Amino acid sequence: MEEKSASKQIECHIKSLGDWRGETLSRIRKLIMAADPKIVEEVKWVKPSNPNGVPVWSHNGIICTGETYKDKVKFTFAKGASVPDPTGIFNSSLDAGTRRALDIFEGDKLDEDSFKELIRSAVALNSKKK
Image (cartoon, helix red, strand yellow):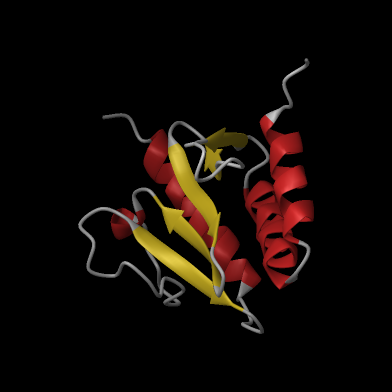
C-alpha cells in the first residue's frame, strides 16, 4: 500500500473534521504556506490515540504545529518565546520558556497579515546560523 504524503494526510485530516475546526486549520495552513513557500509540511506523533498525527510546518526546524481539540484549533510555535509578536497574536502558553501558541475558537477573527509575519519571523529565527 502506498504511503500518503504529509500534505495528503493533512488534507484527509481536515476533511475528516467536517466542521469549523477543519475550515480553520485549512485557512491557517494556506496562510502558513503563503508566508513562506519553502515551508515543508510534515505529520508527526502518530499513535493509536491520535491516528491522524499532528500537522507540522518546518523550515530549518519546526515552525509550528496545528492541533485540533473539541473547542479550539491550537497553533504552537516551537520557538515562539523568541519570535517578535508586536500585535499580540499569541494568546496561549505565554509563560512557557520556549514556545508560544495561538488558540483559535469558533468565530474568532485573525489578523492574517500579522500571523504571516509571525511565520516569517519564526523562519528567520530558524535560519540564523548558530
